[in-house]
Length: 345
Image 1: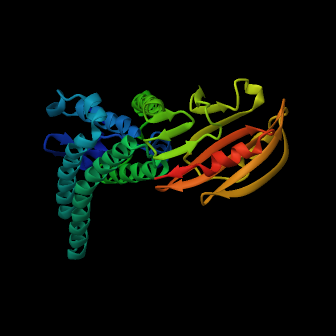
Image 2: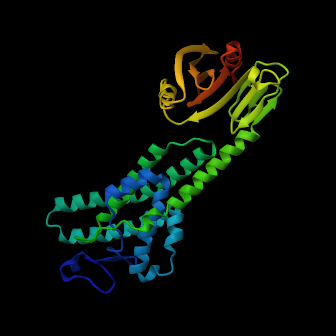
């Protein structure tokens, strides 16, 4: 069933009302399932499409809003959510007046008044909640932290309450909103944010790491390693992969170090499971050892050559860091020196 400026079905006339120039049927009724899935996928970026569709419906059905831009109001939804909530609040008040006229007992009137107060509080709290989660996410992004599942859950909760509040003013049998391209408008800023994050991450690798002979210092994450071979400089092999040759000929000995930031829980067997999928690499033995108070998980592997690989598990500032250190089997002392040289401040 469609509700337009020109058609109001007779059986629903009593459910139609206007407040501050906005009709109560000028909204999209979204399913909670769709809101949940898209919130999980795109977190703070999904409401861009959600509010774009709502503002587009308001513009289409109300003369006073003919000059608004649904796109910009969707893109900057943390701020325009206050205007959206204000419209809802006025319509809820109009709905309350209708319900009070139809109430038969004093108890019903008290219940209606109580519900309206709760709705009014939601219309204040929900925009503040959306603005808070967006600002919080952006602030964490700037310092290299993300809590995507938590952010997605909060966004879903905010939109779920927004939608449930909107349903209270919608007429009976108001049509369900369909999945459209507009629902995915948040994909584009989401991709842009990922690219920006990658660029920022790669730039910090080169700008915050200092090499001084056989010493490597990361001033961004405050750690250092001292490679064991004297008079041999450390060089960047690829990406964040640093190596040092024992002598002029790499075949005489090579030791490398690579670090990663893991966002999930550290599994002691993750590397063992990884190499089990590689047909050309065989696990000979594994062991653990403590270096500077940190646990290292080491593996002796056989591929084209035999070599040691160790992962040093360190927890700092509620982050989990894994250091991958590999050396040729011919010089196991080198890996011991490198592991013991790790310093954090």
